[in-house]
Amino acid sequence: MSGPVVLDPMTLPSDDNVNKYTYCVELRGDRWFLQKGRMIAYYGQISFDGVGHGRFENLLRTSFHSPLHVADWVVAQGSGKMLLADRAFDVNSYDLDEGNLTIRSGNLLAFQPSLALKQSIVPGFLTLIGTGKFVAVSNGPVVFMEPPLRVDPQALVGWADCPSPCHHYDFGYMRGILGGVRAMTGIGGASGEEHQFEFVGAGTVLVQSTEVLMPEQPTGAVPGEAGVPGGGYQGGQQGGASGMPRLGGQLGDLQRRFGL
Figure (cartoon, one colour):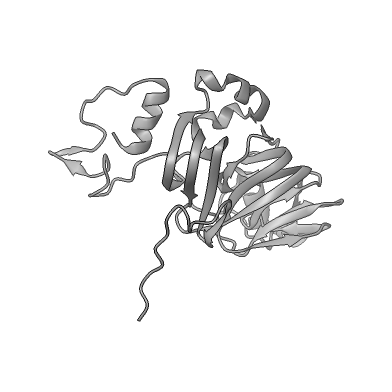
């Protein structure tokens, strides 16, 4: 019976998947943006700093234009290999070549600063513009579709090089009394058979192979579990609530991230 495959810096891939749940980014003195809490391990000399840190003002000016999401991202820089993952969801890398791609904010894992990140006019989505590589996760494999197309909102990952979608409601759903009430109030929700995002024009639509959204969680939060530093009960107190003052700025972010 063969044992597990043991990896080291020499056998880890460079800018490629380790498996379908884990991606390896190699830093060679350069930088990457990554969502907080998504780095699971690394080799080498790599530092992690908040996006708003003073020495990254130029980087922020050219590559990050999303004030609503500044607190959710860090800049990784240095030399080495780091592993990225998100709760065992499928992870893949994609290349943009003078393009633009809009993606659900929770699905974007990391991206190169050669891409500019902007807030989409569609709530809950971000837009990447330019040339470079990014890493994204999905709940199941991604299917690439060509418009015109209607997509269940829960299955939508993003869209590239095509106009933003509009809402489409099924006529029978709109005629029904219950459907009308739900459409006006939002009570009861709607299924993909009743409500879709409609895409027209040229481009590509990214659809995950499930209608179940990835569950949201506060970025960088430490789970309240025994054995997790800052997450379990210690001395009758919940970890992280021991009276230690939280430091501001960069160190405060690192405290939250590492459960100190």
